[in-house]
Image (cartoon, rainbow over all chains, first blue to last red):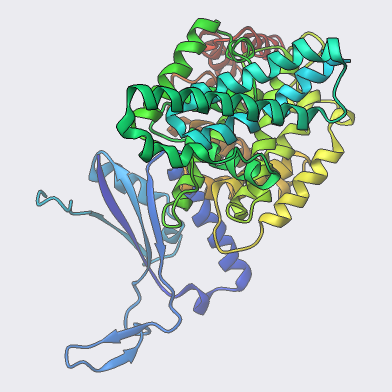
Amino acid sequence: MDEYALIMRHEDGSKIASPEQMQAWMKQTMDWIGGIAAQNKFVSGTGLLFADAKVVHHNKVVTDGPFGEIKETIGGFIVVRAESAEEAAGFAKGCPVLGGEGNTMEVRRIAKNDGTH
Amino acid sequence: MEQELIPHLFRTEYAKIVSVLARHFGFEQIEMAEDIAGETFLTAMQSWPMNGTPPNPVAWLYSVAKNKAKNQIKRQMLYREKVEPGLVNITGSTFEHEIDLTAQNITDSLLQMMFAVCNPVIAPEGQIGLALRILCGFGIAEIADAFLTNKETINKRLFRAKEKLRQEKIKIEFPAVATIEQRLDNVLTTIYLLFNEGYYSVNNDQTIRTELCFEAIRLCTMLAENPNTDQPRVSALLSLMYFQASRLNARLDKNGGLVLYDEQDTALWDTDMIGKGGYFLNRASTGDQLSKYHLEAAIAYWGTQKTDSREKWETILQLYNRLLQIEYSPIAALNRTYALSKANGKTEAIIEAEKLKLTNNHFYYVLLGDLYSGIDNLRARSNLKIALSLAKTPTDRQIILKKLSG
């Protein structure tokens, strides 16, 4: 069993949705995570806030963002246990961010810290 | 009168005497502490009927226990002087101290004993057995009854547990500040196991079940009363146990059969305990730590509210979503899916339930049977039949048969 990060890529929801809609998405996300946890496949979850986000550029210039120029910013990621990348992708399919057109889920196996890959 | 007084005092005072003595002499002398405490009560049983019950029975017990301990010390000193002269100076100092049976030392000793006994170096059933024997003053026969086994098995289990604690050189002391969080978690786990042993016991004897639940509550109360261990999650566990225990009388019918939640007579729910549950849930709501006990207590609170609103089930669903992220358990996964069916509908819950694959758990098939009923009754029946073939106790089989015939 490997661990996979399921990375949510979507717009800053608060820019396009009402607080009620945000709350509905929050419930759907909690139900999605709860469903994975009920299968004993949940490892951890990390939400990333858009507020105060910064981008540090190669010339060390710091700007606010990433907004505007990128539609698919990272909104957060959860880590799951899965037998294969396909199973992990199956978990990702249930994520409510996919309800928004242009949004994606990225599935990445997490490198083991023991020198193996 | 003595016939009732002595067993009562045994329950309340035995643990105190053993804990104080064991702390004085060290855990490796635990059997001696138990013997002295046991002999103290034997002396009471012989003396009180003849000479009358002393005006202050507890003080009498303490003073007899002290004297017996002093005699024991003298015998050991003598032994050491004669047999191990070189050791007298080393051990002499600890043996000269007076046995301290003041209220403060009793409380401290009991709490420290709790930390010594609830130690993951011994198996959970060993911890529960020792807790019942040493901290709750249960007799071997009573523990055997509670676990539906024989005295010999319990004796062996306790012996092994004590041996292990001696080998590991477990001391009766407060854990160091750096380790108290972890150690307190161990203690809470054992207390919760003890409670569940009573609440979900295979034993149909309501008295035994209730006693186990109340002993767990009593031990947890001691933790809440001591500033060193009075953490929000201790209150959360107390709240959880009070909410659950409030239904103890409603859960079983006259013949010891399990009464399902929906069919319980709410007039039998203990409102006093529900109130205590609420008090401790409030008390738990400080600090920034959300433990599984907080979530389970909040779920148990909703269990005391018989309304069937969508909001209620939505709240319960979200509590289970969070609980499962902290700690997975099959029962939480099943209950979460039930709440999902109430909050989001059966169709979604069936899809989620089919993913759980708890195929050796009869409750899983009971849940599937419930979810499919009214949607696909054939499937509902086939799931209930699998549940029946997997059910282990007559009570569980009875409930499934009732569903099958309904």
